[in-house]
Image (cartoon, rainbow, N blue to C red; front, side, top):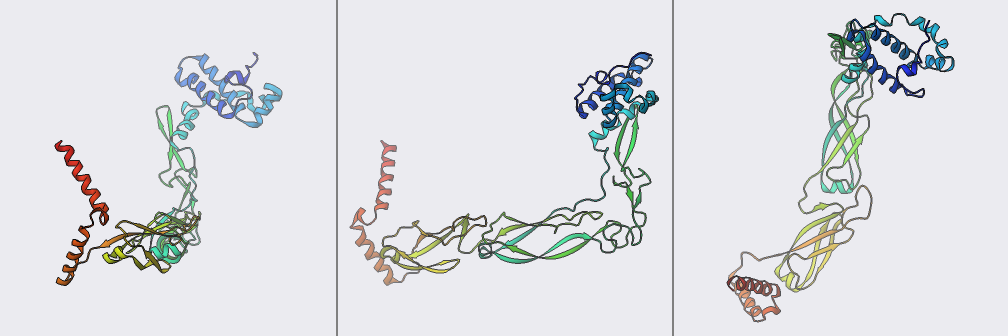
Amino acid sequence: MAAKEDFYKLLEVDRNASDAEIKKNYRRMAMKFHPDRNTGNPDAEAKFKQIKEAYEVLSDPKKRSAYDQFGHAGVDASMGGGAGFGAESFSDVFGDVFGDIFGGGRQRSSVQRGADLRYNLELTLEEAVAGTEARIRVPVLVACNECNGSGARKGSSPVICSTCHGHGQVRMQQGFFSVQQTCPTCGGTGKQIKDPCRKCSGQGRVQDTKTLSVKVPAGVDTGDRIRLSGEGEAGQSGGPAGDLYVQIQVRDHAIFTRDGANLFCEMPISFATACLGGELEVPTLDGKVKLKVPPETQTGKLFRLRGKGVKQVRGGVVGDLLCRVQIETPVHLTREQKDLVEQLGHSLSGGGKHHSPQEHSWTDGVKNFFDKLTG
């Protein structure tokens, strides 16, 4: 009897090759020498038997260990002389290849985690800045209390699928190729519910509404999320529930706008206060504060009230409140008031740039612009 060729050489791999390398080379060589692709070629059939025998040994950790220690003598008895290799079909050799590609080679567990949910929570600016506790009602799928989430009628249980016999997949033959796909009867779980629960119709879950209390930390802003672990949809067949994500949306405020830690507001002041100065009451989220307006204040001037903004939820210093001045033009003047304004206007016009530096600067700029166009 001719000596057997070394199994590692047959599969063209090193002795320290990984399982993945051995499997890869076996597939490549089995594809090349399989009898179904080499009809009437006895040499190819013999070669196929050899590489099949080599793979049977090297893909099994115990047999590979015995082979590494004792050579062929360590595995010949367990291999039974290699009988029966030629009887395997081409589709049997490569069925797992297509299972890996199309995902049909694995049974899908019937126990699955529930879906995550999202709830949009609207808050006022005051609630977002100070923090609050909100009660929300969330429509959600919960485990059926009649069947405890199994989907089977009380007193019964799911049975092995009659189509796939518990494997979760079926094999379809196409020529000499065989493709595995998810079992259409059980959906890949390997089990069937013969006597479904009346309350959930075999789904194991029913629609319900949860009332939850959500603690909103101080400083949250639009776009922030609060995660409530395990408050999402119930899992299937007793699987863990998903999570509920509470998405924060802060409503527009009548006075303030927010930018990170800072608050902004527009502050109208009278013409007299802008000219002569004065003291105003300014609203903040903590109450009213006094603000001194210096004489000759111009529209657009920004006053900063430090520490009157927001402390963000992620920490850091408290922001500021920035108040932008808007000088309000008087309306609905009486005849007497109009006369006084005209007198003031005549009086101020005699001062030229001294009283209205911005106006004269702008006028000079316009004049220079047109001089250049006509020059």
